[in-house]
Length: 178
Image (cartoon, rainbow, N blue to C red):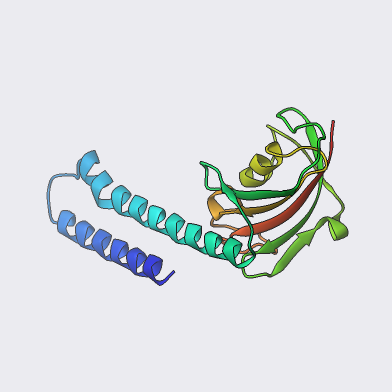
């Protein structure tokens, strides 16, 4: 996390220097120059941040002896109890029970207090990582799901119990599809 802060400060300093240097020039910056000055450092910072989060997720799973699968998107999941129920697919409405914590163990939400969640797969207005995990499940399956911020609530959080840039840990049971 310290590396991300240092990289962020360096990006800001480099950007300020570039602005001062270009403000005395009579020629406007070219689009290539703008991309190189601003986009490339920000992309490098984002990649470093995702790598750091990936390491944190792997360590968390290792401490719990969870054998996790990592999807191409960066989602981690482990279906620890499997059933032979119908497989989830886009277009179905999924009903599921869940417990949601942050990576540091802080409790956020649970179907015990809010009731089971119900979403239409493929058109859901939920965390894309949670939907991706549900689509890998069958009715009756139980899974541990770790969702990095870019597949969850991202930088803003949810404005309530999930802070900015939070990694989410779900325990999910798919109960019904219709």
